[in-house]
Length: 111
Image 1 (cartoon, rainbow, N blue to C red):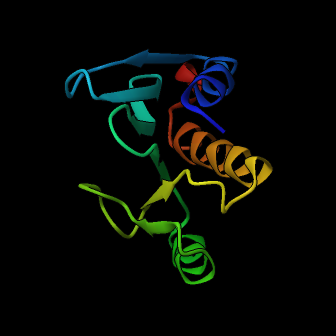
Image 2 (image 1 turned 45 degrees about the vertical axis):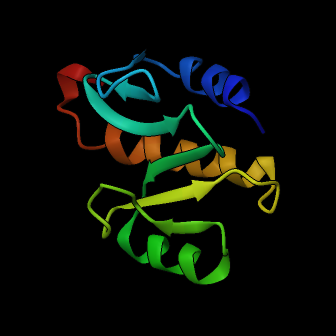
């Protein structure tokens, strides 16, 4: 999986925008102005995803490439190293989970 595949998947979702609010090396995907994916654009590809707290811990225990969210609330965010050790299908599932976790917090008028 590469950044273009991640970008394409994120932008296909309803209400998603992308931007570089933290500088040119971090691509951010938001739904209704709330972040659900951050992706570094320098060095090894890593993405940070919002996650259910119990699932976040479980994923960290099962996958070496899943770490507590870098510069994020570690209870709710994981950083995933995209190094081929985790299937593309799993990464897509986790992106979808992050999108849904953020979308579910939006008021009805913004869904």
